[in-house]
Image (cartoon, rainbow, N blue to C red):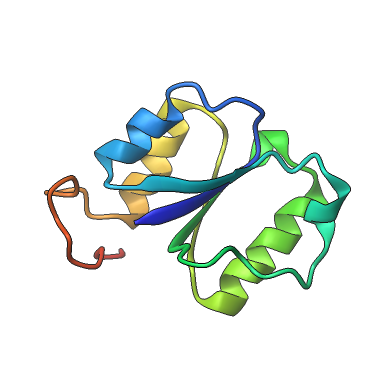
Length: 109
């Protein structure tokens, strides 16, 4: 599953946590650039999940990416930028059993 990660300058251990869920970071946007606040821009091609780190984003940037995910029918996960918060948020949305080896579409809760 390809993800667009929005927020935070550095990701630290976040890629390892995402890998445990079978998620690959296809694109990372810090959200600092004023161009990230434009509402009409589409998500990059092939994105299946958008992860927003809310403690590193302004309201306009969050709103823009929430609307884009909704418009394109992409799963949206919002949480603080911490390993524990991300694991909890993903655990509520994704059935983790066999994620690393599975090539089937994810089961959403």
